[in-house]
Image (cartoon, rainbow, N blue to C red; front, side):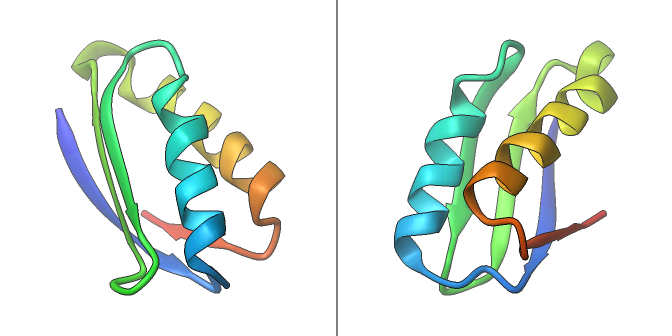
Length: 72
């Protein structure tokens, strides 16, 4: 399943790259992209585990950029 999310308060391109790298390491994630310019994130992950994977994504993003919000 591939879904797109808007991001709020993502401060820099370096943070976006770190978030993308952390998300790609989560088990069940096929691919991910985080765009600083567009303030958007795309996640491609296993359908049956998507909600659990998103919980891990939120945690991973909070470690890199605590102020950034993922709007679902």
